[in-house]
Structure formats: C-alpha cells, structure tokens
Amino acid sequence: MPSFAEARAGLQGEIDNVSPYRVRGWARNPQLPDEPVVLLIANNGEVLERVVADRARDDLLQAGFSSSHHGFDVWLPARLDASRRNIVRVFREIDGADLFRSPVILEASEAFGPVLQARLTTLLATPMEAPELRERIEFLVDLVEGLRRRLADEHAIGRGREAEEEPLRALVIDDQLPDSRRDAGSMAILSHIRSLRRLGYEISFVPSDLDGVRSLTADALTAEGMTLHLRPHTNSVEEVLRREANTFDLVYIHRYTNAAKYGPLARSFQPTARLVFSVADLHHLRLQRQGEYYGSERIAADSQLIRLRELSAAWSASSVITHSTHEAELLKADLGRTPIAVVPWSVTPRPVVRPFDRRRGVAFVGSFMHAPNLDAARRLVHAIMPRVWSTEPDIPCFLIGSDMPDELAGLNLDGIEVLGHVPDLFFALNRVRLSVAPLAWGAGIKGKVLESFAHGVPCAMTGIAAEGICLPAALDVCLGDSDEALALAIVTLHQDEALNRRCAEAGLALIEDGWSELRVDAAMRRAIIGSEPNLKLPGSNGIEQLSR
Image (cartoon, rainbow, N blue to C red; front, side):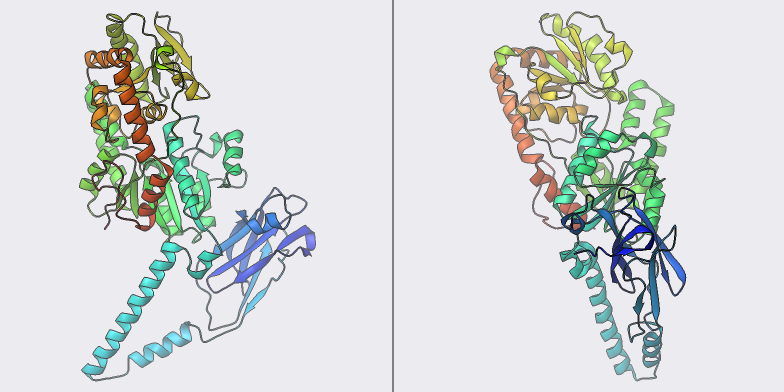
C-alpha cells in the first residue's frame, strides 16, 4: 500500500525499491493531480536520469486516488558500482523536493563489481598445465551459457521473479492514435494492442504525429487502460524512447515509415526489448502495382526505393508481423532468417438479420483517403455498374466511406446512392445483398472484405482484394478481375438466393475460425516469444512463424 506521507512543497509519493540496476516508486502533486511529476535520480551527487512519473499502478487506485498514472520504473543507464557506497536520491526537478525514503543508501558489498572482477582475472591468469586449463575453460563456458539462458528467459517472460508482480511493458508507435471508425489499419493495431494486454503487457502508446491527436480518441484509449504519451508532456517519439530507456520489454512499431525512423533509436535506448515491425501492408508492393497499372516509370522507380527502406527496417527487427500470407511469402524470400509472423486482427461476426428478399443492392465500402479505394469506386460507378444495369437495371449501388471526394459525393446518377461515412456498418449492410471490392491495385489484407464476410454478406472482388486471405473454394464464384466478370458476379449473387446464402455462410465460417481473438493471441504469442508453434492459421501454409 503506498504511503500518504507529504513531503515539502506538496510532493506525495515514495521510493519502492532501489537496486544497482533499477529504481521504482511513485510521485504525485496533490495540488495538480492530473499533471505528472518530473523527477531526477542522482547517485553520490551525480544526476543519472530524468523520469516522468506517469505509469499506471493499480495500488494507487485501491488506495483511493482518482488516477493511477503516477508511477515510475527506471532501469539505470549504467549499473551502480556495488564495490563502493552508493547514495541514491530521487527528487522533484522543479524544486529539489525529495521523495519519501530518499536518499537510499546501498552499502559496498562483495557483489560482482570491479574488486571481485579483478580477483577473478588474477585467478584465471595464474599459470597452469593444459588439463587444468581445459577444465577451467569448460567450467566458464558452462557458466556463461547458463547466464545467457537466464538472461533470455528473463527477457522472454519479463524480468525474472518480478514478472509475477508486475506486467510486462510494451511501447506501441504509429502515425496516429488508432480509431476503429476510421480505417482497417486502426482496427488491426487496436486488435493487436488488446491481444498484447491479454498476454500480460501494459501498453504505452506514442503517435509520431503529436499535433493530430483528437481528444475523443485519446479519451477512449485511456479508458481501455493505455498510457498515452501526448503533448504537453511529450514532444516526440524520441523523447519517450530516451526518457524511458531500458524500461520496455517490447517495442511494437507500425508501418515502415515509423520503423525506419524509430527502429534504430529503439535498439539504442531499449536494447533488451524485442523489436517488432508490423508492416500493415507492403507499401512498395502497392506502389509497384500502381506504377504498372498507370504505366508510370516514376512510381515504379519510387517503389524500388521504398522496397529497400522496408526491407532495411525489417532486417533490423527481432521479428516482422504481416496480416497477409501472400506478403509473408514475399518477405520470407527477401529476409532469409528474420522471423516472420502472420498475425490477423480480430473481426467480430455480426450477421445481418433482414431476410434476403427484403434486401436489395450492392455496397462499396472504403476510406476514400486511400488511393486504391478511390480508383476502385470510379471503376465501379463508370465501368462495372453500367454493365450490371444492362441486364439488371433495378440493382442499386451504395457508396459508403469516410473522406468522400466531391467528384463522388456530388454524383447525380440513377442507381447510385452516396451514403458517405456511416457510424455503424451493420445498418448499411443489413439493406444490401452483397458488397463489391473492384480493386485493380493495392497490397495487404482488405478490411472491407473481412467486414462484409463478418456481416454474412458475400463480396464480389478482384484477386487483389482477396489476396492473402486464403479463401475457401466455396467463394471462388465471387472472384473476377475484369469489369465483365465482376458485373456477372454481382448479378449472379444478387439473383441466386441459394448461392448467396452458401457464400455468406462460407465467409462467416472463415471469420469465426481464422480471425477470432483466440487466433490473434496464438499468432501474437508466437510472434513475440515463439510459443505454441503447432497452432496454424487457416491457409497459412506454415508461414505464421518462420523462426531463425
């Protein structure tokens, strides 16, 4: 139970523990309880570290505080010399007020410091015969291997015995705070964050775009128990990595742009953490296909540059996460021994309830900030639907999605209804018989396809839209790459109730089996600690964990 002793200048808190490696405790200003306290840690008069006391601690809530984010846990940049006396102070930066129990005195001991190391060096340097020399070498090799195994075990499951008392810590880095209402990328990273929490990790999140934070999104994430590093207390990702050096067990970086910028810094400031690079989708593959589609040599050249940057970020990671089995195969060929994990995101089945005969039409769903979606919507409106209407003129088409451009929002075409952003996709899909994803280029798993399946609505789609999902044979009828083939698939699925039902059931089964929280947790566990190697994702061809 935390102490309630007040220090001067209104500083509340105490030091829990000091070791030659680490300092832990909590600090709070009762006059400004929502502002974290900034502390300095000094040893024998020399400042070693600066820390912001903003970690969550359940014991503070149990003690009656309105907020739990007042803890700190610092791994010192260098081990204290245990062969001499150490006087460790923890005090507030603005006025020098000490925490309760500060200073802590660590008396000199016979620990593994310079004195003991010198004795050991002298002993091993003593002249000896070859048999005795071999005996000492074998002893030291066994000792070193045992220490290495112990270190690996501690960083795989936490920090030794303390892992039983404290959660593991993960730092997640992405462009923006995730918002499941915005895009599939947000749904994916939120699912992975929740999986990490179920696996025992305490989550800290820092966006690279600190100026684009929306307060409602921040409030929702904080309510889930995440620690957010935002302005005015945080000015950059680099600041978090440096300020909390050696405190994270896992650094999860989303998208190659962030991995390229912050991967080396994470290696420097969090050297014992497992560095996971989640590619979202292969950006260079999307650009390559875009260049081929438009016949642009410039875009094709850009794709090769991006490819080098993506692979460089992947080579430096402990493991790479992708959602797509297709992209896992490509990464395997390029990365060799770097571990690759196929980790889906959880999708909740919400089958529509309106009977087939009371539904009508086809829906296109997508964020129109994403260029492949905008191109696909144009193709649908101007090339595919006219072919559909040539045989079935009464099939309406609904355009659904955020950031709708004026050219689509202002469409005045018979048969096209622009819905724009909808707060709940269920109500939109509950009125149609199928969705359509006529993507001609792109990369990664398409969230619009998964959401359609999860709602029990078949999706007429191109091979690009279906790529990496590993569709069952029952859904082959939904595939088509040409305008004519997609128009035929739309008409067939709209007319044939029995076929529509079979496809809906196959899509729902795919989601329930391959995109559940159970599957996400199993795949995530393999990605970060390598356990449960025999549990495979459907259609993954064994790629979900390609270990070293």
